[in-house]
Image (cartoon, rainbow, N blue to C red; front, top):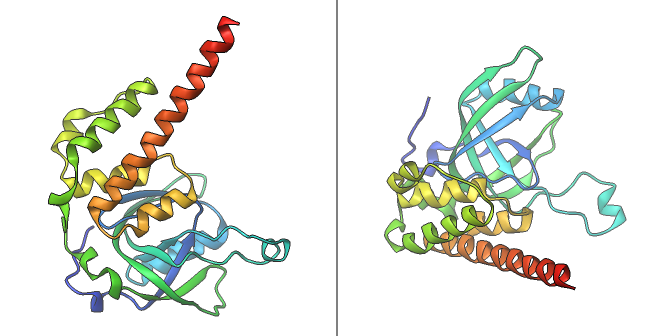
Length: 227
């Protein structure tokens, strides 16, 4: 089940959030979730009955022992998603497909009686997220495809190139960002990119750094083996 939204006025002002470190959702992107903790199973049931909206936002890393002893604060920006399909497993888990709708800034975290967290959100800085392919023509598609090829070759991996090459620029950039193997800070930078082209450039730069590190490590190993 999918749904297109024309205005941010159609989106909920408050909603449940699933705070997962290193997990990224972007508008019109697809994120699979495996839900099994009792508090999040309750969240899923409640969300299903209340419009199917769920926010994905990363927790902030604690910087002091005092912060580590408290529930983690949330990052400033997340992405609202909508449950578009789900299936229940024999062992009590729920496998969910969440489709990205629009990014949001956390206005405040709400006091709740539920075992899961909820926020009040502001979508206004991200109104264009509701419009598909905004800025897609500015993406350096050739550079992005080239870095993907180099990364796959360096790791001995293959891909469905027919599917990749037939993807729109938005689908390509956002899906690669979602599945990218980078850490929480890098994922947050991809989320907060001001444009699709900037997100693509960040993805290219991150992958260039990884390939350079791999080449350096390989060179060191070659030198060690010769000694």
